[in-house]
Every structure is written in structure tokens, then in C-alpha cells.
Length: 190
Length: 190
Image 1 (cartoon, rainbow over the protein chains, first blue to last red):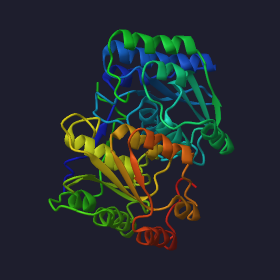
Image 2 (tube, rainbow over the protein chains, first blue to last red):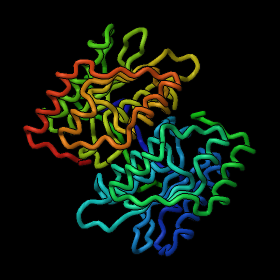
Image 3 (spheres, helix red, strand yellow):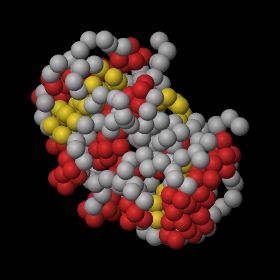
Image 4 (cartoon, rainbow over the protein chains, first blue to last red):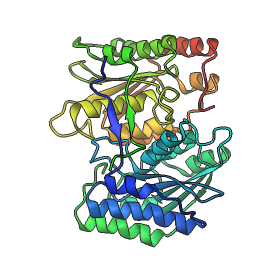
């Protein structure tokens, strides 16, 4: 039978076009700039919340996928930027684990500290490294809730071999949050 | 442009057919039985992990959506049963929040305590109540990791007005986990 409630997860056209990119991004700053660029473009286009994410191959610096917050656009509370990036990377590579045998190590770059859902998802997605821009405090200042994330949550990921780095290009990432607020953007999980 | 990495989230045919259901389910046991039925059928059909979920309207007992674990089938580490149920309920109702104005209260029934990702997702999905079957310990005994979930995580949800109940029809739910192990099912997030 056809499935009447099947759903499609995609990116806005500008983001899908941006994802096609053969450049190599060498540094954390270079890669974070891509995540922030997506967050910023999402605000400008009015296509979602002020959050962007990108998955890179750690060693080569190749861009694998982008994620733009799509909660309001796709009417789906789970489609935070990080979730979209994980799903697209796995769709592209045809695997449910970015740590599958034969694959190079992957890293998540996200324009803001992940919420509880996205931090859990990172564990299952198979990334080895999580690099964050704006902080939890920056998101909370905007009235975005981040959910139950504790120091012990980060320790749990560390114990599973995942490195987490905070505050890379924080000021630039925070400026995108501020611009969203100034435009009166929806706080969908206040 | 077309989006080459857009992805589709659906249910196996048997589950999509099962979701069309006008009955009213009065009690927690009645509703949990539906979640466990999905988990069990997922194992029998070989369509995914031994986890099922269902969203009900709290007061009326109407079934709104089902979720079957689809990680391996759809090659997507985020598609735990609860996530699929949240997404489908929101797709059906056309909203990113099951707590949106004008909607009745919704509850999640899940055949096993939610992992860290799904617990965070429950907060954003807008359910008022989470009812669980098998426990975290039951999942861990099968080598399924549940991620960073702590007593403080539950307290966080409580403080946001979400009630959580554990151990409803636990033995039946655990029996499905056991049957999955006996069949040599994949532990995709060990």
C-alpha cells in the first residue's frame, strides 16, 4: 500500500545547491564558517531557525553534507540542523553509521552547542568529533531551550571516543542568533 | 533544483496499514500493547530493531501515529521508533508541535525507555506524557546503548510538565528484545 504519512526531508534549494562543493576545508575555522554560513542564509531566506551544521571528512576536509534547521518549514520538531546533516550524510553514503568499516572519520560542525536530542543523535550517527560555535548560553539567551544536557552528557560522549570542542567562531555564530531575534523569528521550542 | 540527497521516512507496509485504526484505546496497558505489537511485528518481518512506539490522544484514546525502528531499513541512525512516531504524528496533523493551540494533549507509548536522543526529541515534539515498557537495563542487557540519560534528565522533563511512567507491560516488551537477540538481530548502536 502507499503510505499516506510518509514524509520527505530535504534542504531548501539554496542549501542543496551549496552542498555540492569539491573544495577542501583545512581548519576548524574554515569548516565552522560553512556551518555559520548555512545558519545565516537560513535566517536571510526565512527558511528556518538560526542554526546550521555541516559534516566533514576529518582528514581530507571534504564537505559531506549540510544541515539547515527545518522545524518550521517541514513542520517537524526533530529537524534541527544537526539531525538534517546526519541524515543527509548517511543518505549520501548509504549507511546508518558514519563510523562504518571502510569509511574515513567524520566530524560534525554545528553553529551552536547541540541540544539533548542532537547530542544523543551524534552518538548514534558515528561522528568522531563535534565542533560547536555559539554556546548553550547564547541559545538560552534567545529563549531557545537546549534540553537535558549536563557535564556528564559530554563525559559520556568522551567515554565513547568522541571529542567535543566549544566556542569556535562563537561571536560570528552568536551574531546570527541575534539577527534572527531582531527579525522576530519564531522561537519554536521556547 | 532537485535535491539529490532528499530522503523519505516511511513505515514498512504492514505498519502503515496497522496505523489506520479508528478504535479507542482506554488504558495504558491497551495503548502499550499497540507499541509492543509494532516492536514484535518489526522483529518478525525483519524490518528493523525490536522497538515500537505509538502516539495517542490522551483523553480520547485515539491512535494518531505508529513508529517502528527503521535504522537499518532506511540506513538512518536517527530513525528510532519514537522519532518515526513523532514525525508521522506531526506530518498527519500538519504541525511541528503536538502541543499546538487547539490540539488535544498527546502521549507517547514506547516499548522501551527512550534513549538520550528520543528523550530530547519528546521535549520538542510536544507530548505531555511518556509511557515506557521495557527498561534501560533491559536494552543494555541486549548491548543496545541508551546514551547519556540520567535521573536529572527525567527531572528536566518533569519540570517542563511531562509525566513519565516506566515498566508498563515490561515483561511483554522485554520478551520482544529477547526474541530479537535469539534471531541474531543487528545491534546497530552497540
